[in-house]
Length: 476
Image (cartoon, rainbow, N blue to C red; front, side):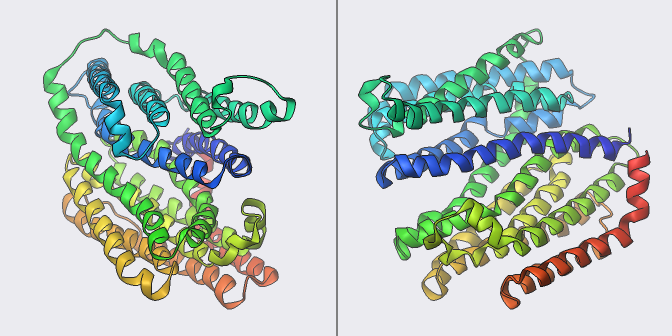
């Protein structure tokens, strides 16, 4: 099997493990909003914002550091695995102990009920402990096992949500009655149970190798990883600052519509996440190959092709997707953001692809700088333009931030790790897909026939330009 063919196969498997949980979460949105009061749903949202933030903090870039050194011939893979595992386990236990001791004060500080905060700490601790075992599965080329465990976890979470929030009231089942007056806690219990099950499934990997701690390897892992941690925090700002600011400037109703329509761009997000899961270990494991840079260039081109196709497809059939995912018409006031957000996420995917230059050259501080630049752009443009042009400012700001990050990252890559990207092809596909998508939605007002013709025209251009190369890859 060719290198690229194997890469795309693994990415498809990772993508499947990403798609199904996302679809399940769509089902839960309707369940949660029908069951929980607005204040409880807000607590639910706050819970997961903090979970995302502390997840980045607690893993301190160790996952990517693990990939960097696991396949490095200078270091024994088992020793890298063991050192990373011991480090994360130790810091997680320390975190859990300290936070649990001061839980009253900390819960008040983050404006969460104590019971909610305790669930949050439990979920964070368990999810952090399985980071290295999950990374090991990816680094050792086991996407199917990785995906199966991920799917078991999400199905557990979904089924428990259905049991607690649908079956119990419907059939008058009495279980944990003290929580019935505050049903959002059932959501957190379901999450904690899924995290416990995941930990148990991966627990054998804690004994996968002889436990030996190498301080010199730890120093390498930490030096490589801490800028990634800062970059991760900046990324969370890029993704969530608009949803934090909009309620203050335009009100919660507008923010609700914006957030709901933003979720339609999940198709691009799923594609990017699946790509990242397959790409990161692939890039590191093939770094020493003779044609590695040419392979990376080809991966970028086909990523842009697939992402561009998704941009056009989702935009052309946006009427269908909005009715399927956001049925309440009151939310459609913000539907105009979707093509812009889709394009912004495509640029984000390109940025993840480009990031290989600073990861392979051990210059992860540049990733931190780039993410901080994006965060500054996000904060500044949102503050300046939301009062002037409303929620569309947030969508355009997201596109501006990720576009700037892509441009600066590409310029820096030419100096530090020059990959021969086919800028002509990439530019053509980006310009065509953006033109077709925006014309279909903003000029032709979502006219289905015209949009479909534009979609097939784009597919035809891709077929003509890439037919020979695609056949070579498939036949290899």
